[in-house]
Each structure stands twice: as C-alpha cells, then as structure tokens.
Length: 123
Image (tube, one colour):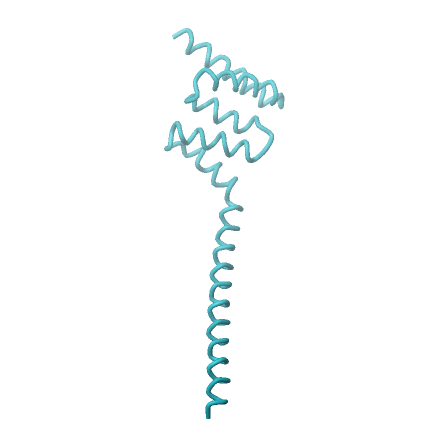
C-alpha cells in the first residue's frame, strides 16, 4: 500500500508541475512512474499533456487506450489529434477513386478510338 501511495504522490507532483508549465520536470517523474508500471493509465494520460509534440501525445494516448480501451477522455483527445489526418485520408480515398475512374474512361476511349480507326480503314 505504501508503494501505491508513493506512486500517487509522485503523480500528483507531476500534475502540479504540468500545471505550473514545468513540463520537462513533470516528464522525468512520469517516465519513472511508467518505467515502474507500463500500465499506469493516469501517468500515460498526464504524459500526453506534458510532452511537446502532437505525435508524442498520440503515442501516450494510444498507451492509455491499450491499458483501458474504455477511457473516453483519451479516445476523444486522440480523435481530435487525428481528426485532420482522418479527413485528409478520406479526401485522398475520394481522389484515388476519381483518378481510377478517369484512367478507366481513358482506356475505354482509347480502345474505342482504335476500333473506330481500324474499322474505318476496313470499310
């Protein structure tokens, strides 16, 4: 129980550091907590706030969801981080479909023209 209390105290210290914008110090504490217990959900969640890049935050949120797939906070935050990426992927899929359709139509027209030329010489 004492170890659990120590972990919670260190997590609270890290949270205070994040709120005071001392994120590097908070990251050191959170890394230690995660090293001790890679399934420490709250440490991963606060690490997502403490890190500098969105990619790092996404990795941390993925770990939260690995530990607890039902964590709606992490799922919502991860969706917001990846929302633009999801929208762009949908646009790329639509453009790929249009490209594939255009290429198909080009082949149909090419073959049609070849047949028209061939049959115009035959007659």
